[in-house]
Length: 81
Image 1 (cartoon, rainbow, N blue to C red):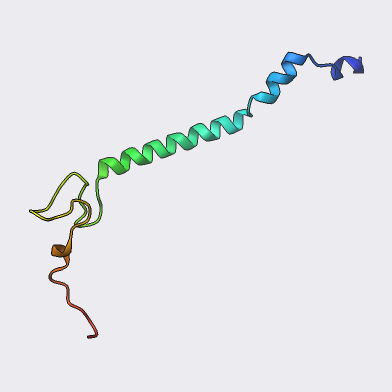
Image 2 (image 1 turned 30 degrees about the vertical axis):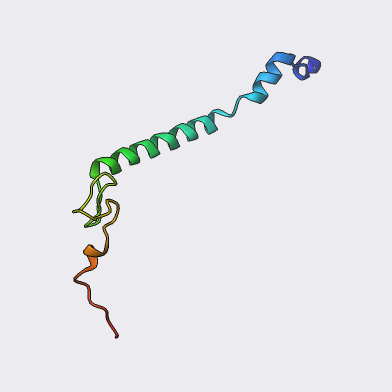
């Protein structure tokens, strides 16, 4: 009877080696779900820092849409000079 336990069919042994463990599949699925939800929440919340603009907007005639140009720092004073 011990001999029957050690004999395995060739097709069954090969398919078991190629399939990843169910815990790994579940973890990857959960990871993808968490990243998808966090991306959706971030997209719905929009920019959180003041003065941040999307790449599609422009500020005035010479403004760059991403982060602003020298106009944004016009009223800052240099310290220690």
